[in-house]
Amino acid sequence: MKTVYLDNNATTQVAPEVLEAMLPYFRDLYGNPSSMHFFGGQVAREIRAAREQMAALIGAMPEEIIFTSCGTESDNAAIRSALATNPNGRHIVAGLSIPPSSPWVWIWSAMAIGSPSCPSIRTGSWTWINMKKG
Image (tube, rainbow, N blue to C red; front, side, top):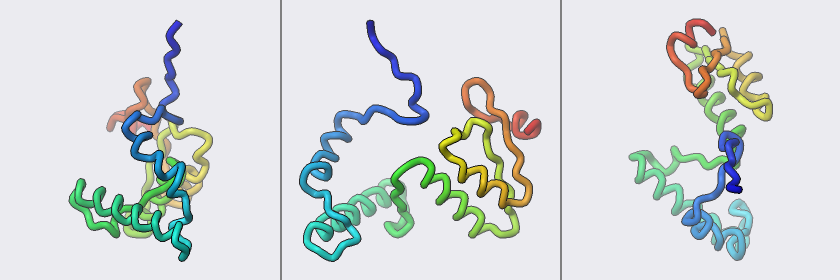
């Protein structure tokens, strides 16, 4: 029987080419990029190159690229940035499909002025009609 994994919202299988590209960092280049020693410097250079590649790919500046370790950290960074850069428009719509493992999304949303929750339709997407209902 073939197994089908349907929880890709939480974790996904790593694509073979991604795994191949990451193997050196799992095996040999695992130093702390914030450290001043040789091993950290090697990794820091690789991260800098990856940031430059990503920036070139999307037409951004390298300093605008932020790597995070997980979805929750990404959610927090996006919400904090939105609140910091738009102090007069502090309105966040939080979807009811946000997993319980991301409580900070709800906490940051509550800090905004007006934070309605928006029900999602069965496909997990939102519509303007749903947002008005929420």
